[in-house]
Length: 286
Length: 78
Ligand SMILES: Cc1ncc(C[n+]2csc(CCOP(=O)(O)OP(=O)(O)O)c2C)c(N)n1
Ligand code: SF4
Ligand code: SF4
Ligand SMILES: [Mg+2]
Image 1 (cartoon, rainbow over the protein chains, first blue to last red):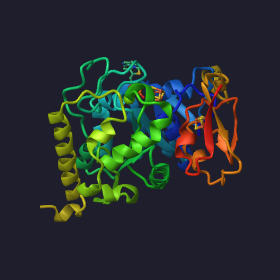
Image 2 (image 1 turned 180 degrees about the vertical axis):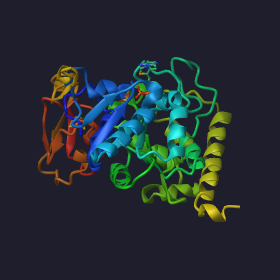
Image 3 (image 1 turned 90 degrees about the vertical axis):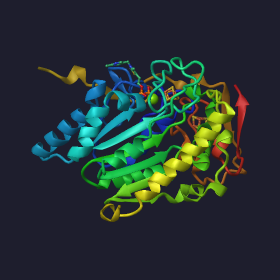
Image 4 (image 1 turned 45 degrees about the horizontal axis):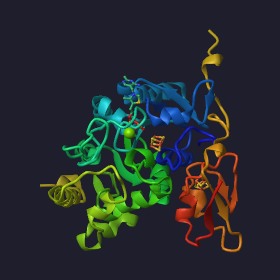
């Protein structure tokens, strides 16, 4: 769904994720500012093989909802995708939350490179503890926000996490979301070489180590039940995980004390505990 | 109103021939390559297929070299 010769950096995870949009039938994308916009191209050229509507940040899910409803009225089949960065999700969060609760017929895809990369790496709410950005030059001292958990708390129609590190799993989730109706959210982990400061050939390794350490947990939530994805399942068990320090070491962006590394480990355990509760059907939740 | 001029047209090379960005060139050893397709899956540019690379656009990121299980790809200084 994207032509070569686009403006993405070497080893860009977003470019890789954009290729996978070919899994979704009749796609139309609403896209706010970000690396994605730059990759999509400068007018009068476009790198995208699909229709893109460039929109103001906070409006993204609202525009997607409007497009989706409009196409329905016109009798046109379309899968409208709100394709956002993590920064766009910060800025458009209330529109996102409302869209999930209304069960708008859209697919919200967040390509999360854990900072505002296009403007030169400012911290977002997705930026993890200890990561150096231009607005956290000594390393961020606030933990990241877990958007997947928040969206689960909305009991959204379909919620999935994915990563460019396991591309078949990501493709399967895009494909599935494209066949469902209602609000569908896919949170894609997108390790960014220049932003996270690792060599461009390591994008896949970094992404996989995030899963292997538990820093990124892969799951799908549908019809009120959460299922952990096969590729990442074994890392739910602590004994199978690599130490978080090993993931952290793949990147030069981190400044973490031993206490903070221990805190990261603890938070991974806690988040997995919470996710496990969503494995039971909603009605039997006590 | 004629909206046509406002609509961007899809094309290859929207940012030019990005092959010029390369520091290192991936070179596939045809003897070792089993055309398994893993590099094709992971190349962010989609420019490596069955061991053939479109050097006009390959940015030289090295991901194909990393994911190749046969170690059939070498990165050679341009
Ligand atoms: C309303 C508005 N505020 C600020 C900007 C400047 N801006 C452009 S891209 C960007 C960051 C986007 O970050 P993110 O959504 O994470 O995308 P990324 O570039 O990281 O993929 C900002 C703040 C803008 N274009 N519009
Ligand atoms: S800064 Fe990161 S996410 Fe943005 S284009 Fe470059 S590699 Fe891709
Ligand atoms: S070096 Fe990067 S851009 Fe070039 S073929 Fe390999 S994966 Fe694709
Ligand atoms: Mg971002």
